[in-house]
Image 1 (tube, rainbow, N blue to C red):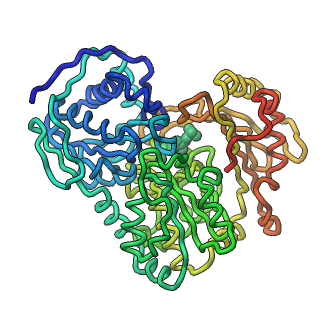
Image 2: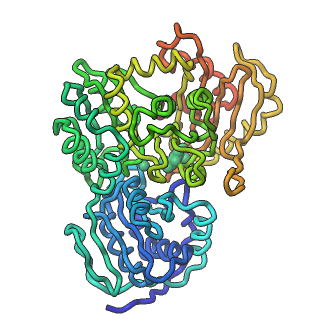
Image 3: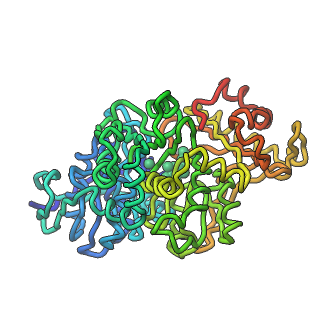
Length: 543
Ligand code: G6P
Ligand code: ZN
């Protein structure tokens, strides 16, 4: 076995996005593409000789091949040990858990999250730091800078490592330890939630359905919900992880998790439904014939956090991304704890959690989590809900409606226009930005614009500033419309429009969000010239 120095040339498109580098599988399969990026990570992070890494992915097409390459490159770059999930599997929150538990130098996660997989689908890679969270911008910028000047990468010439057998192997002086993908994570969940109460709830006939969407959470859900908590095996659907996610789009929302949605809105609907995404960090929560918005879910978990043993001592603070509704702000106010508003992207929560400022965080993009790891965590949210349900013994709908009755309802919806030509999307955003002055003070029906701005954030921990994080149109009565371009797409541009109106009146809480927001939807079209600029009559996805 020898270390080979392979000559290479830079690619100019290896700039990590919101959550690592994501491209079509075919791009990652092109010669040197993955290798260049991995070497750029290793060059940028300057790990000491002998350092330990965690490595795993969501099992999508190309996962195993990429893992073999990364192991050989890690060995050639002086790492002492790599903890790799069995068969290359680690959900994103499980990877974060393992990094923290074994105090490794960092970890590499292979995933394109909720983007479709398979030979025609997407692949992705990201680096996480010793705190278990995604690399901050200064690190990803260093990685990008290295990728533009790289001339060679290091790799050992060695046979592939068997990834299906637990245990340790030597790879050119580096230890490769294949670990159980689920055990450490399941143990952490057991320490946070009242498993006895949940087991009793299920034993009493409370019916649940979890949709793993043929992605990474199948084995995790089986170990925790079925083996540990006693749910019947058929409580988990699409439980077998497949390299192409069974041809589906593993994003847990009302559009893409339609099989589950049909069951939960069907005649013999179970009491509780949930789904998670490709890499296990997102979640969708449903009750019988009832959808819980991610923004409400965060607020509810914050309000009832003390019901879970891991949070019984109370929470230090909460954080939400700017486009997430202000429902949690109202809870924070009542609990008299701080509430932070950050740009979109889980990485912005890391500093707040490391500094002990917040315990719970969430985003409208179906992400919820806490300081137990440094990623959002799909199954964690499901277990938190089950814990609350096990103590309260009310239906999901009752719990949410009582919450609204107490705090008021932040009626909320997001409209997405996917795969727009980039110039159309940018033109629309530029147009709204250029209208700030003329919009301020303008009245649209019942709504008058108070202010408009480009959201900018100064991190209270390290002082770093992030600008142009979405356009906010704020109305006098606290309602708002936010325009933002997605940072996670791989094809064209996706425009997201976030609509929010506060409704204190209990008698209107039964209204469907689309009906309650009808006027705001028209105003958004007015302000942005949506239909005319996009040529679309309808959004692609409504959540
Ligand atoms: C990923 C990140 C989330 C973020 C989301 C936004 O899932 O992990 O933290 O909220 O992307 O996606 P978008 O497509 O809206 O940029
Ligand atoms: Zn994800």
